[in-house]
Length: 172
Ligand code: APR
Image (cartoon, rainbow, N blue to C red):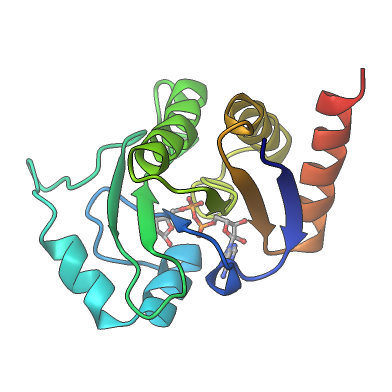
């Protein structure tokens, strides 16, 4: 039986088996948490991402997830997932649920026992924070028997939203 931990901090410091990256479909790095993870992991991570097969320029379609090693990070794996761009995605809720679920499934198939997530789509992809937190934590509650789950929030307001949402979801 695992636990859900909600932390304020930099996900690249997470001491877990798998760190989840909020990537884009090209998987060639970017800004935000994607940039932070690639900087901390080093060039090996990008080299591995480039080996992921690309179909029509997409290595990882929205809602799916891909797994690589973690370069210089202390984790064993980086799981790259692509959340929905809220304002243009036709099914943002479904795609955000899929992004979390597919990340958990990949972690399960690689015998991970701990996993760290950022707030997927809550940055430049502009997903409304309360709804994103409710989605993230509801999926996490489905997998908490299998993992210690860590949510790393980078700013105080989003940290507070995740804490408050978790209290609401777990208070009978
Ligand atoms: N640790 C944890 N969380 C972080 C970190 C970090 N080091 N850096 C940023 N964040 C937070 C942001 O504050 C935001 O709350 O991660 C959340 C996700 O924001 P983004 O990184 O912008 O990710 P997303 O909204 O999913 O957009 C993905 O941004 O960086 C590009 O290549 C990426 O195109 C993709 C897009």
